Length: 133
Image (tube, rainbow, N blue to C red; front, top):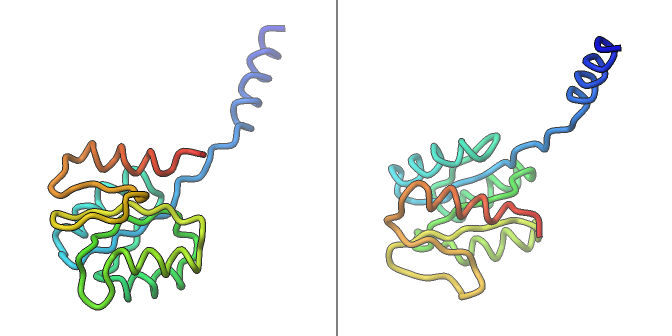
């Protein structure tokens, strides 16, 4: 009897489905910030892509449509973060976006974290974005 209960408990535990971690992308023209943020996101995401501006970010997104969360700077050359996010959401409406900036703010309806920020604030903001709504 005891052995059967242990076997059933083990079988039910191995059948539990673990939700896959999201795929992320960091878009920032500052290489040090981009790499630092990506390293932090690797604790929350299964994989993190990197792009140096909005144009490159759109290219990466088209190549990897499984990206579900993006952390982007606002002030960037070629295509700024707000315009990038707008175009990205036209392609993939369910994208979660967190804006970062030390100078500008996104529209009030967007998730935002002012630079500089503590690591725990970034992790918390991304986890909040990923919560089911």
